[in-house]
Length: 320
Image 1 (tube, rainbow, N blue to C red):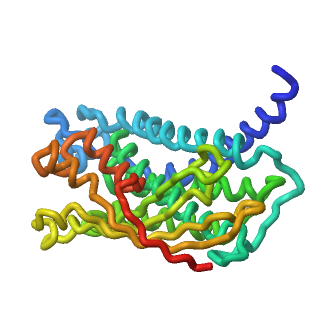
Image 2 (tube, rainbow, N blue to C red):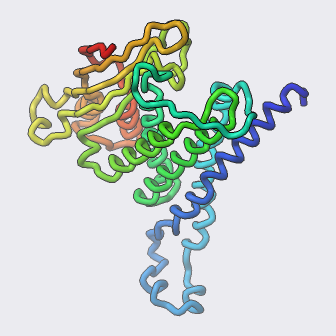
Image 3 (spheres, rainbow, N blue to C red):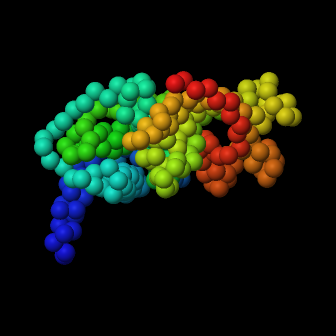
C-alpha cells in the first residue's frame, strides 16, 4: 500500500467502526423477532400453546428466518454507516483528527452564526430524510412497518450522532449540542409522519437545491444553495381533493441563508411558495388516480416528498 494512503485508510477504518458501533445496540434492541410467516404448514397458535419440548418438533420457518433477518438489517445499517463515513472522509474530515474532544456553542439562526441556521435545518432534514428512506428498506428486508420505523429512527440517530462525535475529535469541526438536538428533532419528525398517515398526506418537508456561485455541485455542504420548505398539500384535505384544480396545488413556507461563506454578503430569506403536487399529477395521469400502487410509483412519491423540484414559484422576504 502507498504509505500516503495509510493514514487515510486508518481514519476510514476508525470512523466506520465507531459509527457502526453506535448502531449495533439499538439495532439489536428494536429489531425483535421477525414477523410470523404466513405458512399453512405452521400452526402459530399451536406453537405458542405447546410445551417447549413439543414446540421444538413442530415445523417452523421462524427460527430459520431470524438470523437472515438480522443479517439483512445489519447490511442496511452497515451500508448507511459506510456511505456516510466515506462521504465524511472526503468532505468533512479531510484535515484529519487530533487535539482531543472539542465542543462549541454554534447558536441557531442568527445573522452572526457560521451558516445562518441553514446547517441546523440541514441536520433536521437529513435525519428526517434518512428515516423516510430507510423505513421502506427495512420493510423490504422483512420487518413489520412498526419495527422498520424504529430501526430507521435509531439508525439515523446512530449515524448522525456518530458523525457529530467524530466532529468533536476532528481538527476542522467541533461537537455541537445544537446539531445533536436538530438530529433528534429530524428523526422524531420522520417517525411522526411515518406513523401518522393522515398527517403525511398533508405535510412534506423538502429541500430545494441550486448550486451557489463557485461551489460546484455539493447539495450536502453548499448551504447557500439550499432552501428548506414545509409544504402543505391541498390533496391531503378531503374537501379540496375533489376540486379539479385545487387538488394539484401545494403551499410552502421556506427558509434559506446565502453568502455565509468567506467574503459573501450575508442574507437570510423567508419564502412563500406555490407549487404543483407531482405525486397527484403522476397518479391521475398514469395510474387512474391511484396513489402508491406500484413500486415505481411509491419510489417516485417518496422522492417528491423529500425533494422540491422546479415546479414552484416563490415570493421572497429578506430578513437582513
